[in-house]
Length: 319
Image 1 (cartoon, helix red, strand yellow):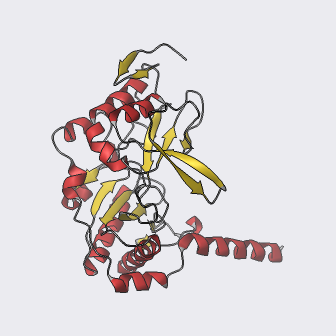
Image 2: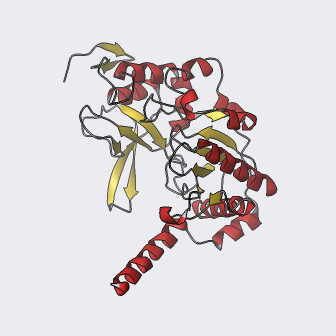
Image 3: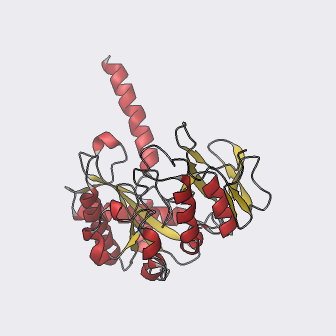
């Protein structure tokens, strides 16, 4: 291990002047300084939530890390979660303090993806989330237009949410939900809102999970539910210029671009306020009829899997 360039909060920080990744236009020091500058803003987004991070090592492709490596310091708080997909227990970090965040920064963890539920009850997400994923190209404006459809769909059933840039090319809408709703009901309500948004403007928005079926429309992704993760507010993204997922006023969402919010510009924007906390409505009760409607809508991933198999059979039959 290389000698520490400096130490903060007991964490040895190394190789700070190395480039963060190709095209970043930033060093590892820039990442560390950013996360340290905004730690009071980003920690509430990840605290008590099993955390996945996207790391990047010099000369290697980025990778998502869920399971903590063996060399993780014993002071990093963690929780063990059974992963059905891989049939094993995964030791997730709980990034609850500045020291742990700095340790992740030194590990070149650029992106922070917390679960939607807290460790107290991993079966009850705290937020309903719609992810607006535009088609390829410079299509952020389309994602914004679709987010406004989601806002209208929510308003039509008496709900409200907060909006942020994803930091990539899309937009996230978060709706805080009163404690007690099950993961299944939350997922159903998310599907129902997505379908309502699609119906408001089917030429713009689609709930088609299979990419080739989207026809250049914005995908209203209702699958960020249950055990899913979503990149946290204020998290950097592994993209040129190192943009940040950033909260925006609904009134201003049409006037911003993802590149407006980077690890260089954001610290000044949050120095004396927390825009995500300010804009987040109070937790709301899910309307029973919305949940009931959602339970009649097929789960997108499952539907897509069956459709993919059907198409593969049809291709084989056609020779």
